[in-house]
Amino acid sequence: MKKQVGIWIDTKKAVIIFLKKNGEDIKIVNSFIEGRERVAGEKKLGKSSRFEIQFSNFEKKKENRKIHEVQNYFRKVVNEIKDTDEVVLFGPAEMKTELEKFILNESLQAPIIKRVETTDSMTKNQMVAWVKKFYKTN
Image (cartoon, rainbow, N blue to C red):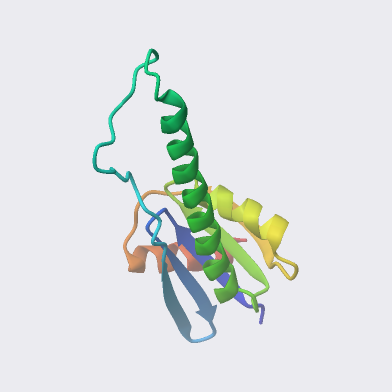
């Protein structure tokens, strides 16, 4: 039997569903990606501000930090599925397509990505049922 996995992912967590002959295993990977971070004294600067260069450097640092947090999140998720054959990615946000790109570019022994689907937020039971139905029909 092929090792089949479904991953529901958004910016807060990834729910990894491993299908087995007599059931399934569920693993949750939390992201720890910071959302909107306000720094004391931070203001929205206008075009005429003489400190605009300092503000843009601060924004670049925040963006770089977020990129590294996302990459670390994806590494944790990929590490959980390294021994699988097939994976389906689904979820409500763009993280599923970003994870697909990461798997294709960064992973040497990547599983076959069967499909990337947009879905709404789901309960764990709905996620498991969705993955089972997907692999039954495909």
